[in-house]
Amino acid sequence: MKSAPNLILVGPMGSGKSSIGRRLADRLGLSFVDADREIESATGAGIPLIFELEGEAGFRERERETLLRLCRTGPQVIATGGGAVLRADNRRLLAESGFVVHLDVDLENQLRRLASDRTRPLLQRPDRGEVLRRLGEERAPLYAEVADLHFPTGGGSVRQAVEQLVELLHQSWRISPLPSTETKL
Ligand code: S3P
Image (tube, rainbow, N blue to C red; front, side, top):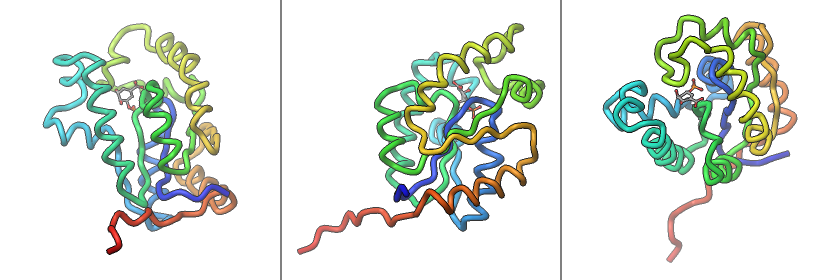
């Protein structure tokens, strides 16, 4: 049983990290934070504009800073962006900072859920299916490297996924308090 302060959700775009994470946090009595929304509020700009002005490299720097900040606090449920596992230092950080769940989704459901998306810069092109397939192939080993639990969401409802996860988490995860940062005199 892994004992760690945060519950961290990783996985591809459209796997339900935010919708499942928010509900899961409610069920577990924890607060919920979405790394992408935190990046946007810290920057004062939406993700499409950050990509436009600073490129993906600029976005990844901001993502790194945000993950460092979020992983220092807790216990909480943290939904990360699909590319958060790309950097080795992020993978180390995530693995050390919580119990990591890899929310997985098949390409068909992913395409259905993202069909009308206009907010993800990497998908604003005609060959969306091919992009998602390639990203999935490249990133699957990276999600597997950090994950304590692999959870395929299938085509079921958010509610069903949350109930199954609550059950699995009871078996394999125990929240531990963050180490105190106070210095004892
Ligand atoms: C990205 C996924 C997005 C967001 C950004 C880049 C990616 O987050 O961080 O558009 O590289 O897969 P979601 O996974 O929440 O869609």
